Image (tube, rainbow, N blue to C red; front, side, top):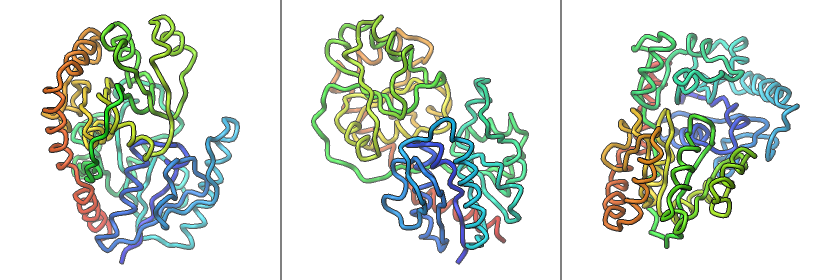
Length: 356
């Protein structure tokens, strides 16, 4: 039986989110294919890390990392990870994030999953993680969508033979419908590429929406002054609410929301809209290439640059019970195309090929 370590830096970087969820599910399910796995992250801030799986190893769980300690905590994690690698002696490492530090000290093959290339696509300022070294030296690269694969080839000149597209999965358990609570749900960060402002302005300019529905923003970071000032300007400050928490809490909001909206300019996959569909929540999303690849036929598409279009589509859908029922039915059918078992199987085959 082969031993695989998931490098755990994403669990220090991300309290909640799609990448950490992807690694957790792989760690939990790929053992079905005779692969022994562990995630090692000595210090974590992740809400869901270590709750279920005994093979998720950590020493300390924090609510957040003080800014002045970020570099220190990353160093501590890397230091203990190196010690653990010496003890455990895995056959393969699967990187959870762009952690170049370990490259200087490892001499075994590794896999890298690229979830998106948002910074490259939108020409945003790159973070401190240098992707190019890990991408260049990886034994194989997994992309979570065909769109991400094409962007990886474009921006990093990676040979297509080195890349496999493996769609992430979505839990298949279907929950009973809960009573809806007049909620429009927005999930995740509100960074510029998420296009939160166009969504909020579209909502704020609709008397029908503001009179009948509140907006729940579920994520990690509370509203900033700039956002609060916008709410005040639109006179909707009592209608917009920030919530944070773990997956269980998020699932409750999926179940009780009348509509899920994501107006991103760019994404690498579509975790949150698929999760909403699984919870019988109708979805409106941007007409960007990756959402067309993943979600086509099961949602309403909008032009993310057009506030009037976003406003109109939300109004039309929320005024029509018939349209909502049709989308819910199509969404539940779409979710069946993204089973974790498919992801486990394809990923295990990549491991096998690398270790031949």
